[in-house]
Image (cartoon, rainbow, N blue to C red; front, side, top):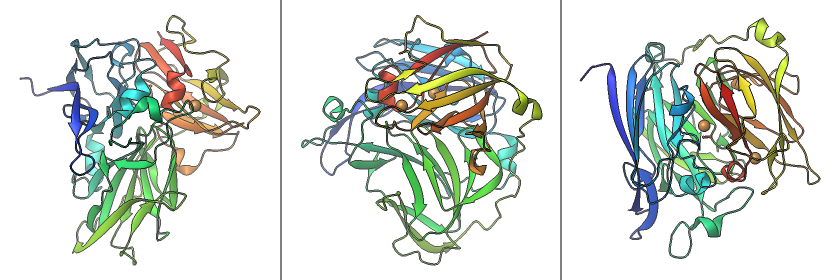
Length: 420
Ligand code: C2O
Ligand code: CU
Ligand code: CU
């Protein structure tokens, strides 16, 4: 085996999971019954991934945030039928980040994610390892995947009963597939990699004590500097890495991560043990907005519109036979995303582009907040808001762009770009 070649096998499977004590819930998972493994990649290495569909329905394996060529991206054009498999190879060509993977068959993505298909991809590089950030997996570095679900009276996930055309909102929160989890941490700095893996729900995370934390990374990499925040909102598919210093929090009894409505998301159990004392570096990255990007004219306009199943992009619904945009590989273009309100006022749409990490240039012509000045692959756009982003694709192929409310995506709020 060539040491530069890593082989992962990822199987989409059906199984049973004990989410509630003593009850088996029918679920989907990758390499197991629910959710999936964490795939760890190093920048610069060549990776071979074998994907196998062991479900009895079509699926795809989409690598959300990964910069690979269109035919490896796993969009709706890359269907694997039951029993089929596909092996592909690529060179990891982007900086350290927390990415994820999930299915993308058109019209079925929401249901398959809902049933449990989602996994994580960590990219590490020499720089990320030299920063001295907490990185002891399961000790001071935890992934937290937030997903809301509805269980029927037999404790089953019944997507068609739960389904709502504006996005399925559940009454039961699962974190990493677990009901009512608690997180035990030492009195030290702890890194939390937050992923909003819900179909439609937005979360605004904060500590119930009002203490602040540092955001260190966005969807696609480190921020230039850590940003101190008291709360952070993530719309579906967005990620944020935050560092909470549990040695600095005075009131550790009943400490919890809560949502905007003050509902408890994740209680912490803080031990007496201290640990990691190193500082979070003041400089984490050097992403710049070059003048040339700021001065580029808008060359792509995207208008998000509608609610329920009336959702469109530029007045159209997804058509697999139609290419909506073309762009040249390696050339930066400015996309203007506008969320057009309707008679009801409209709603936030999280806009996502496959195969690229982009920079946010402005929100309504103003500089984006500090914690959005890092690589992003999904961006929330409020009703009547205009967001400008600088987009460059490193690879060729056909990629999707869509609203990441998965029911909107399945309802056709998606387009295709051909990168040549
Ligand atoms: Cu999470 Cu089309 O993507
Ligand atoms: Cu994606
Ligand atoms: Cu939407």
